[in-house]
Image (cartoon, rainbow, N blue to C red):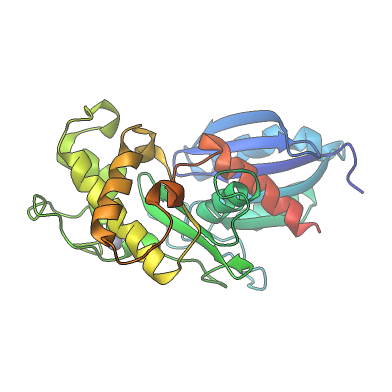
Amino acid sequence: MTDGKSHGGIDAGGTTFKCGLADEDGTLVETRRIPVTTLEETITACLDWFTPHARSGGLATFGIASFGPIDIDPSSPAYGTIIGSAKSGWSGTNLHARFGDAFGLPVAIDTDVNGALLAEMTRGAARGCTSAAYVTIGTGIGAGLFANGGFLGRPSHPEFGHIALRRHPADHDFESVCPFHPDCLEGLASVRALRARAGDPEHLSAEHPVWDIAADYLAQAARTLTLTLRPQRIVLGGGLMLAPHLIARVRAAYDQQMGDYLDSAPSGDLITTPGLGDDAGLFGAILLGQQNAR
Ligand code: ZN
């Protein structure tokens, strides 16, 4: 029984670790944002915040939705280990062991996008769907995919940010920011890619031509998802989607690219922003922990 206890979770992003505690009903009761600095400093700050709850026996379950690549196979000896991260000093870090040992609890670990997708399907924009995708468009790009009762890509996870795209006619000269691919989604449409073209997207006017390029690429990504997975909902989240005009442009580009090929639901119902906003990842982390305990 977990009555009266808290359910903890961390949305472990590249720049911020969002820590939170929820009650039995899933309502967030306490949160803390911890900026990512060094590995030890960041993990110690998280442990310090949660430890009083764990020590008093008040922590019932714990989950982490983390940036990757990360080992998310519970049967692997390296479960919860960050692999080959672009983040210096983090590769080889085992989040499962660090938090599990400290709290004396089983800790559930999955990707940040799988966590956000779980939360959106449970209580957000994909509620009631049996298949859905969550794509985060931030410093990097990643996706969580759910169909046939489970996450796809097991025992690993998809690397959707690196699918190939067709270049926008006005974008042939731009050099991809992905060190591996000259033509991938992350290399051409991440926040980093937009920043390299035109400066910080936060400060760009809605009229800037770079938005049409970004919308075209994100529509190509949504088109690929529809034509392969056929999800009932495609949730586009992450920092770039905070630009309020972008979602309508992605839908328009998607409709234009798809033409009349599929007599499917209008893209306004298919492609959406997160219902849980910035909290999707944190809710997801907490849900991962709760599911793990069942
Ligand atoms: Zn790439």
